[in-house]
Length: 351
Image 1: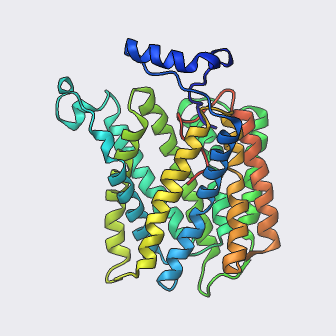
Image 2 (image 1 turned 120 degrees about the vertical axis):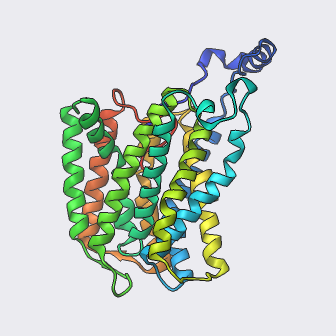
C-alpha cells in the first residue's frame, strides 16, 4: 500500500533518451528510462531480502553482548536513527538564498510540526520493535509488525472518517484473529527469562506507531517536503526522542564489542538505506500492491533465518497464527489499494 512513483508510458520508451536531453535543455526534470524487468524484480528481491534481515541483524547484535534487553534494544534504535540522520544529512544542502536560513523558512508551510511528530513516532516505533526481539521470537515479532496496513486503515477511519469496505473489514478481522493466536503461542529456543507476551505487545505498539508515522509522512510530502529531507528530520528527532530512554534503561552498560557496532551499522545501511530505498524505487516501475504484498514475505524469510541460525523454532500455534495473520494483512492490502493509498514512496510493513 504505497503511492506509486511516476511511470514512463509504454509509448514513450523508444524516445526516452531524446526526451531526457530535450527536458534537460528546457530546464525540466529528465524523463526516466524504464529498466528491464530483470533489473526491477532483482531490486525488489534485494529490498525484501535486506529488510527481512533486520530481525536477524538485531539478534546478532544481542548475541554479541550476551543477550537482549530493553536498554540494549533502545541503544541500537538510537544508534540506527542517529547514523541514518548523518548519512542523509546532504539532503539539507539545497536551501536557496531566497528561502532564508532558518529551519522554519526552509520547510514548506504546515510541515514543521508534523515532521517533528513523525520523528517522535519513528523513535517510538524503533524503540518498541527492537526491544521486542529481546523477549519474543523473530517469527512472532516480524509477523505482528507487518500488520501496519491494518492499522493504517483503522487510523484513517478514526481520523479522516474513511470507512473501510466490507472486504477490508474481513481482512482486519482475520488479521486480528491470527494475531491473537500468535500472542498465545509458545516458542522453543528463546532464552530463559524471556517474556513472549511482552515482546508481542511491544511489536504491536511498533506497528501502530509506524502506521501513524506513515500517515504524517503522507501529509508532509503532499505539502512539498521531499522524501530525503523528511527522512533526515524524522531520524534526527527519533534519535533525540529515544536518547533519554537509553540513559534511563541502560545505565553503566558497555563498552560494547565491535561485533555489536557492526550490527548497528548493518541495520542502518543494509536494512534501512538499501532495503527501504530498493522497495521505494521498485514502486516506480511495478504495482505498489505487488510490492506491499511481497513485503509479507519478510516474516517467512526472517523466521527461516532464525531457525537456521539460532535454532529458534516457533510453536505450532505461532505458525498457524502467523499464517492467518499474513492472509488477513494481504486481504486488507489488496482491498484498500485502489482507494486508500498510504504515504508516498514509503512501503508498508518494512520496519
